[in-house]
Image (cartoon, rainbow, N blue to C red; front, side, top):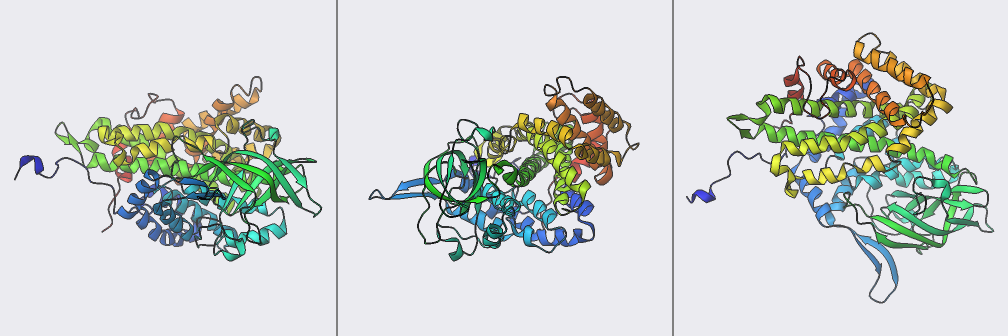
Length: 549
């Protein structure tokens, strides 16, 4: 045999053939901690999802959907306006699975007491396949609590949004088996400053109906069936439902000007829309649009945390798999002390993110519990800031574990890396969320009480956490230049919450490593610098994927 034609030696095989749910001890542990007597049912329900998510088929669709990006067709050959986006079949495969697994609005009409926890765990797992298509899935999930501001509109749309049937194409909603939702809030002159929106909403002679004129700077998935939009009505910023297709089958006056050329998330069509005399229905009261849409924002922020935590877990799995199947300098990479420290440190970051994400998701299932809702309010702002901010650093280190192989597109690691900053920007960048933490602390004292209750549940179990909590309270006692310290406060509070949850509900070895590094400062400032005396080998062993038999 030609020696150049021999099978490659000392190369890891692609990570396929494992169950993304059951092989993840942090995920199943969090489900067990927060799912109560329904936890086993949740894991059983999600097992088929986990098996498909870890398959070679899913991995292929991940790559194809991003290699063949969506294409905008503004008009047909005769000049008739189309404003349609064409997607690769892999996008439709991904959407079919995600919708079919009930990851859109199904939990809002489910009788299960843990419907939102189950959906969050499923989104965390399925999002590891591909993040771009999770954007319309997230928005479809998130729109329902906002729609409840109007009983008639909620009744009209919720059943279709909660469907597990993916039905692509622009047709009247009542003719479709399933519906998808989006939103258009930001405009080019304002970004996160929504009160500067200049889109004009003019009321018609029919109560609740308006005509919109204006431009939206970022609207993802323009082929969705309906959008929540903010616009200036006579009494101020208001929220509107904008259908893509009108009841008579005609297209609403929505022009897709262009698709954004983005760093990552390239499988998803993010667009600029223009409204010219566009039909809309008011949702909620005039002048109360931001308050109306904030329920949608809360739900999308939840998915930002879940998405970032899922990216972390996917990156960790790839790193752990590669290093356990690659040797250098006479030993497997994963058995070498320096790499053990790196992998363990990555695992600590991933497990903390997973645990806090599932904990906050479990609060959605308890809408009548004041503590749970106050914790959700402060926790979403804290962890949206911290988990999403940590993700690019974590993914970069995981990519490096694969060496040059990780820099090659076929590995998937560049895709993950390009995706990793997005959730920190979407639904409010770092400063917006850090300042939102301060807003909650000053205007809603029950938020601080909920945080103190949660971290106080393990008071006395770890002196490093107790010290960190006292440091936060010292920071909050002095409100001078508090906005200057907003990120410091938000980051410290987020880490304290993660530490408390790991101590209470996580693995003790992971909790010990987290408190030693993130809270006690015994950390070198980069991954792979955990201190001596920790059981790093056990942490690494927990994270290495196991193939299905």
